[in-house]
Image (cartoon, rainbow, N blue to C red; front, side):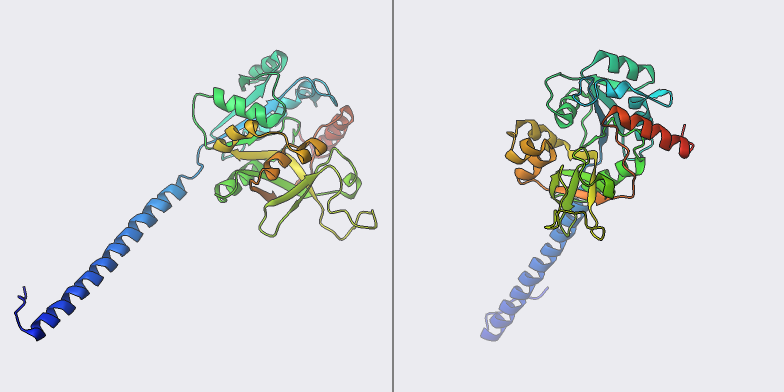
Length: 297
């Protein structure tokens, strides 16, 4: 150990040495803090939104197609086909059906599904998912709203939107789009979507968007069709029902717009998928014909 003398030169040397040790200590302390912080951050990142539940909201009353979840598609109720496809997703820790109708609940229990009874007052599938989430015994980080009228939903799409939300901490919502067919361009039951360069939603509409001044479909433009499936951060899902209805949401009758109008971010992934949602009784025949062509039982 060196001892400081009373001489001026020794004093100067001691001062320099002391400053060096102070700087060294600060740098060492900073490096340790950064390392600890990095480990803590990475630990949180690995655990970020890890617990996932899939919820299939289903109601009997529907203005376009009453009793739709129970309609048979090649011998099985549509809700059962959606359930069976959803069970193949690898990111779901649990899967339930949320309904306000005892006939649907009885049907679902019959093929082995877990059922959560919800209120008839739910305004949409998102509110029904929130009520079901509150009634579940376990806590989850992500809730996937799986539309019961998509009997051919791809489990890879479920996994895709879950992973997209896990990878985007600034988003509270994620969903999927696919290419829009020209014949669906002006169908109000086929919801269209536009996104920004980073893959976040800008707008959803029942009309064709973007809409050019020729008022015709541009065959060169990659229009996107919104697929009904979506996932939410569970904390945001608890906030959603408390948000007041917004003008665009009410005009388009699209719940996604309330999210965007309130300034929240929504991540969108593009997938290759032929949308086969059942919106009307006529769609059932189309689905069955397609399944026969593809030899799907």
